[in-house]
Picture 1 (tube, rainbow, N blue to C red):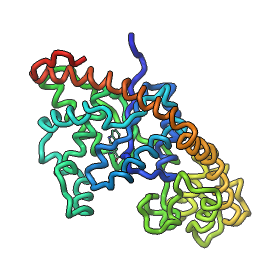
Picture 2 (picture 1 turned 180 degrees about the vertical axis):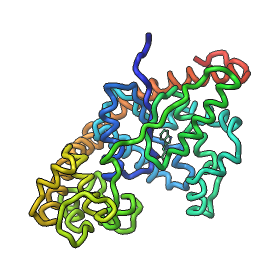
Picture 3 (picture 1 turned 90 degrees about the vertical axis):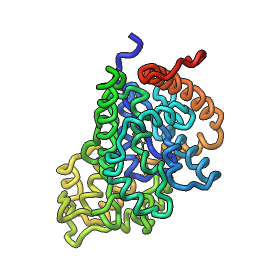
Length: 338
Ligand code: TRP
């Protein structure tokens, strides 16, 4: 058998500037999945075009995200890390699947509604069919599992609907994927408004830890983190969201559970606690940051080689699925399409 491992597929929009939330909620967990699954991780640059991009900045961000994936510990020799746009089959299958998706279904997507409100001057058709391209991403690789955040749950559901609909007409063409939602510790909230998710677009820079923030910046932001007036390190999401968020972060990095953390900081003030969390985060990110700098400078050639190898791997699988889909729907054979 060519491959007995289950296929796992995920990705992020190419314009994402990663935060500690993306790291603890996604990247760090993805690294652990590599042994067990055959993993694909895409830098989703076609999806980013649904919002107007400045070309040079866009290209730079896409490269930075690729390097961040690798620096974060995803090995491009064992994981297929690639740019979505390098495999044209995504857009091609996206079109075919558009024809198997109802406009009514798409207009119910909450992300479409939110984004249309936010970009009212550019409610383009790409924004509307965004979930279908995402379905194509996943279905091209016959993915069994898709680790995503809760905000993508609806998109995963429509992917399953599209796959099932297609299979019902043409037989078993697509694997119907399951969502894989992160466990505890994965959710990182704003340091300033801990009932809100940590986001790179937060206006208050102190709310968000960026993966490439230096140690002083990280410690400074944690020192300013909003807590409460109780001065007791105790987990209580509802009444102590700030402290609980810091505990989630500290726990996700050190592996300690709430009881252990509560014991560790018993009788100590929030100052010590915040300092410990800041130090833990800075130490955790230090190797990623130095690897990132290497990849962006002295190891550029290595990255280029990985991109090329992984393009070929991704294309091989994607073409195989697309060939089957083309045949099933009755498009004529392309003589030398392998
Ligand atoms: N829509 C996803 C997001 O914004 C990114 C994405 C695109 C994706 N295609 C995907 C995630 C396929 C998982 C699988 O987070």
